[in-house]
Length: 173
Ligand SMILES: Nc1ncnc2c1ncn2[C@@H]1O[C@H](COP(=O)(O)OP(=O)(O)O)[C@@H](O)[C@H]1O
Ligand SMILES: O=C(O)C1=C[C@@H](OP(=O)(O)O)[C@@H](O)[C@H](O)C1
Ligand SMILES: [Mg+2]
Image (cartoon, rainbow, N blue to C red; front, side, top):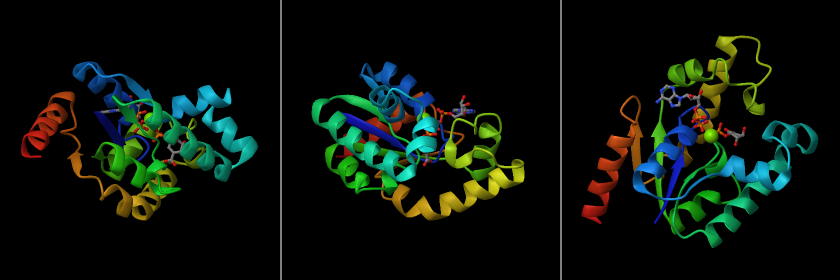
């Protein structure tokens, strides 16, 4: 199976995805890490030197290549992945998509010292500006995230609760 984690930056996709893959004995992939490997530079560098449009194009290409060659995995996507280049259709058609729903307040708390690696959230003057940017971004992306057939809402997003959610979904499928 292919299990895809989607959600805002800071939702815990990379952290939880890695732990969930271990628990499910599935290979783990992180789309940002795949892009960094292919590009040979950080996400921030790609944004800085090539711009967001280039990043989104590469994100779409790397996603499709990874899906084509990987029948079993947990894939942690980037926060914007579902919102560009029909990527969400690829996710919905090739695996099971799970949305990690985390409040803006909690996202801002988690990212207060981790925003610099995320170009869309870097260089903001203070915590209020970060929270405002997250709120605006979530408002624009909610329509995409809401199309995931599965969702967990923090703080209940743990490996155990996700395993239960998956088992319940698969039993009803
Ligand atoms: N359940 C959680 N509770 C508190 N902090 C978390 C949780 N999950 C992740 N974090 C922290 O939030 C930050 C973003 O986590 P990460 O897995 O990179 O999220 P994403 O990949 O969705 O951007 C990291 O500093 C991580 O340690
Ligand atoms: O929200 C976004 O548009 C982005 C989120 C990042 O991934 P995480 O969600 O893992 O931080 C990364 O793909 C890039 O900085 C763009
Ligand atoms: Mg991540």
